[in-house]
Amino acid sequence: MQKLSVLKKTVIPVSDIDYPLAIDPMKIVGVDWDGGHLSIRLNHYPNPTWISALRNMGSYISVAGKGPDSFIFSGDFGGGYAKIPANKNEVQQVIDYFNVWLPVANTLYIRKIKQGLDEADRKQREEIQRRIKQEEERAEVLRSIRY
Image: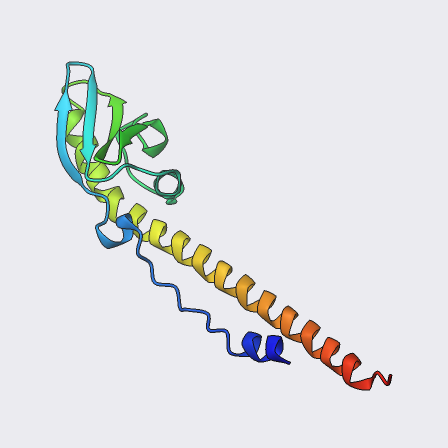
């Protein structure tokens, strides 16, 4: 009965999104061009979930052959880079389009994180309900036993 009481009083906290990229969205903090490659410096390391959000944001406008799938991402926890081959005539346009994509990717990223948290909350609630039912059945059986 104590186990059942504890399970029924279990509080599942509402998940807040406290991921760095949700609190401080991805943005450009610098650029470099070495004559053949554009390097866009980002304020955060682009994790796989954010990269997936950028690459799967749906329709977008880009310089030919310079869409989100063409970028190579790297970095560390001090920041990140989005790199792509680009000639001097393309640099500004690529940066401008990247700036247009950022809010879309950031929004999709937050949505993916929220969906993941909601799914984890749902699974935790289902597990507690399963355990409550199991303990209620156990208590019922134990009450009916005569010895």
